[in-house]
Image 1 (cartoon, one colour):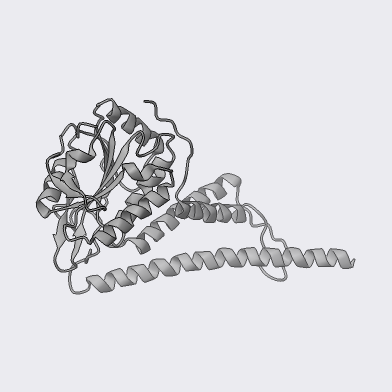
Image 2 (image 1 turned 180 degrees about the vertical axis):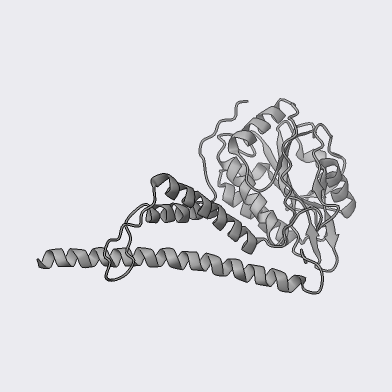
Length: 324
């Protein structure tokens, strides 16, 4: 089966950052108002310099948003024991028993048929990274012509053995709704199970996570897997942003029972704990968050003011031309 792309959907937050960066580059490449007495002082930069500045501004804004949105998500030294080990060719424990959102209980293999499977680990209460990974995964699947439930299946496994059925159902329905394909629901499963079943399956998949009793949350890596119809791990997609072209190739390969190659491991750990330990850890994070927020707001205010001054000067110039 050949998987073909039908769109190149981008993440809306990224589009916003690109728009702001481009706007800044355009502002620097065109005449702007310095004061009321200087209507059109040319403070333009060369086009190449302006473009480089726009790219740098986009990168800075993306970093700033990440700092504000997921400051507790940090690297391996902060949360030991959390990793996404790539165990290509490993077979999942298909005898491990789970329940779907309709209350049906069966062995994991019961959800594996004659189609490749996109496998996601997370949990409904996850405060930040799980939804980002899920949205990134769904966005990449939306860009494929083949449809979930017809050409491949999606299995979402909760790592929380105490997850309420209402939360599981909501998370599944939200993902299916975002996917937006007719009849995809039949091939989109959200499974919950015992601690033993979850641990066996996650360990086989190389998805190493830990539970923090203080915060009552899980520290876990980000990403998803592609599995063959026989339950063998065929490909890994670590991170939060996934190439539809690479996802299409991986699903097609898994459908032929092929095994891919290891990829560069981008480890993002989701953990809403104290990333900086010590008596001043909470204060440090708060100061950093406030500093980043103020920087972004200052940039937005400066760009907005430059636009306003330029439009005001243009309006005054038009009024003078009409009067004369």
